[in-house]
Image 1 (tube, rainbow, N blue to C red):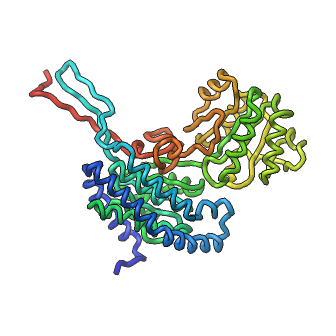
Image 2: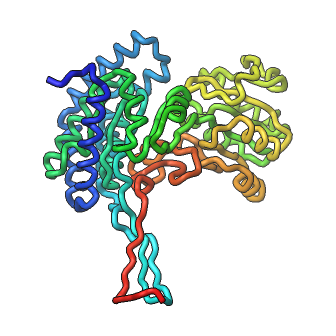
Image 3: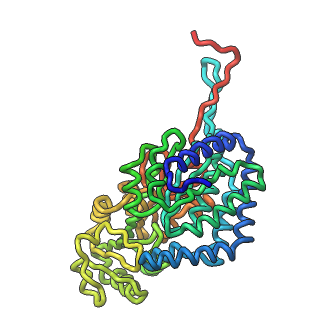
Amino acid sequence: MKDMTDIPAIMADIGARAKAAAAELAFASAERKHAALIGAAEAVWKNRAAIVEANKQDLEYGREKGLSGAMMDRLMLNEDRVRGIVDGLRAVAEQTDPVGAVISEWDRPNGLHIKRVRTPLGVIGVIYESRPNVTADAGALCLKAGNAVILRGGSEGFHSSTAIHACLIEGLQAAALPEDAIQLVPTRDRAAVSELLTMTDYVDVIVPRGGKGLVGLVQREARVPVFAHLEGIVHIYVDKDADPVKSLNVILNAKTRRTGICGAAECLLIHRDAVETIGQGVIRALLDAGVEVRADETLRAIEGTVAATDDDWGCEYLDTIIAAKVVEDVDAAIAHIRKYGSNHTDCILTEDDATADHFFERLDSAILMRNASTQFADGGEFGMGAEIGIATGKMHARGPVGAEQLTSFKYIVVGDGTTRP
């Protein structure tokens, strides 16, 4: 019986087994990885009742912890959401295998033929909160890219993640791939996170997926390289040339479809010339939808709004709350986003091409949108099947991190007895 109190020993064992599995996965065929993911999808659907039952334990734990309504929504699984997990696994399975793909190739005057080809990163550690579907998404994407993965889910999703992980193992077994390719840290003890962040002998990259507290901890303590997924402080700028109907539909969807996801709109910036027209209509529609609108001095004139404070600019609510502010023009909107944004996703609503181009050129968020709901900030919606997170840093991966972003590359150099003079 393994001593569950000896966290360093548990994590070292997991790391060693993951590294060994990664070496085998690096040359596993596309067909076997496909079979493993299809097998996992079938296992999830077959065991959907058990997964939902396990999720009930997590929901009870979440209620005891006093999680917000939005966080409870992130945590909750029902049959429809389990079907979404199955669809995600199948979508990743059907994607082109990135490993071994030739990124570019060329001949040199010195007689060498050089190719740059995609190769797995190795062992990926994924640390995430609340959403148990990340167990399947992260496991699938890492496997597709030929990586072993160590999953450390949030304590509140422990039972759901364990049930989903068992289905991923079924898929690996059916495809004769190493079970250690996808491992779930078997304890809620937070010491496991600290261990994972410093396992430089075994882990090649860490992907944190969660709130500011988690990401801050990872960035402070990690000795392993990190793909940072920071807060989704998502802005929507309503330009003077915005279409009223499009604006209303996009903003309501961006805020209210699911308030607890990182692509949910958190701040509305309205051009001064649009305040009495589009601005009035949009804010009244948000209020009618049950959204608390924290407004600046100008917008406070709209009945039902509450006064914004300095803390509301740059806040990720993940709730039915939105900040709203009047700006003079597109440049003032850009300046506000630069000051308070998180480089995640920002959107402009306008019918003017030049203004949209100006917005796109001068902002450097990982995702920039025009006339589209920010709830599309999602790897599945980008055609990646699923995502492991939205990377907001600038090194290696940026935006939705899918299978292709979980690879590196190597150079294959071929000569014919070629020597250097």
